[in-house]
Length: 466
Image (tube, rainbow, N blue to C red; front, side, top):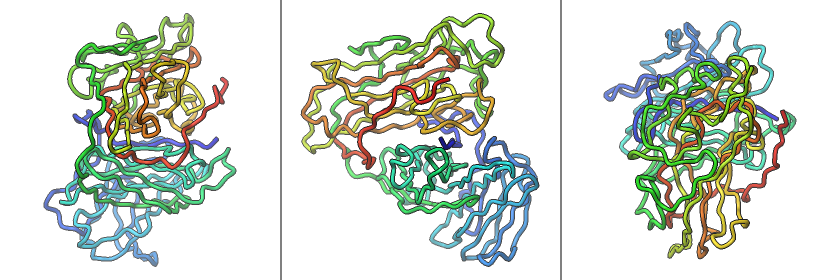
């Protein structure tokens, strides 16, 4: 199975997480600049004093600079044209950003996130970075940028998603170019860009090459009038939802994860001190986790070692189930959206592994009749070894968790009486010392959904025995 993970600048949909991010582009800066970052594509650590070269398309070096202590760099005074930006650093494979355009039609310049891998790294990977703006050329924060193989069946849909930072910048490093136990070459990729209040964008036919950085900028247009709200739940008042297992309605509070720092670690850019997050909006959300411990481990097993990931005495699972919802839509469409924050294990978090986060539609009259809308787990496991105590989060592997926008198509259920169920399953008792899954601002509308292009998923019970 190929390995994939995403670097996400930690920006919250309603408030800024306390994380590091590239410096924003100065608001009055003229075009003719390239703002960039240089990070290790596997460990995600900044590379200081890295050699960054600006060349023309023939390879002639025009400028040469070094990255700062935080891995950031700026190339300025660039004339109109098409360029390459490359990094050459001892111990790393050369990475080249091809076809970087400088033009007056791109007044905010470019963001190029170079993320080379070490020379010992064998898996062929590429990367993607860019800048998302509105139609007034202002940066859009918290837009979700996702990448999928073309066809989607090669990667089980959009296998990696990131959020833009406050400067509209995004970076997805270490995009695997093969799948199926590294035997099948992915012929091309497609990119999806989503942001509430804006029309979605799809970019198809994206060809990625080994050790090459693809730069893709986009301008989002405001969405036309939104559809009718069929159902919404923000958990601000106690309603007829049912909570099983560790699911419960949680009020904002300073609650630390007691498994930290003995059994689990925080992501390097996580400044939370291990506390659970505030709700996305208001004072309440729904959480799979224990308020007494700040995690979903349950009773700790005796004799476990430090940084074990948190082993309990048993596995845990539970469901968060809505009251009946009649899906009535004059448009013929129905779309489910919600905001999600999670921190789970990174040993086998993939969609056929452990700590499964799955969304179901249940027949309101027959609770045994249910359809999976999909899982939030990554398609495959991260690259690094020895990651027992390292989290996988809604921000990516070993990245600070963020509130992330999710969307599923409910059109096939129009005219039916349903319930929604959010189900968390640890599968086993290992690596359960993380903070769990939070859900907020659930909404069903008559908006046309963003089509995934693949059938509803079917998953094996567990494809990764320990």
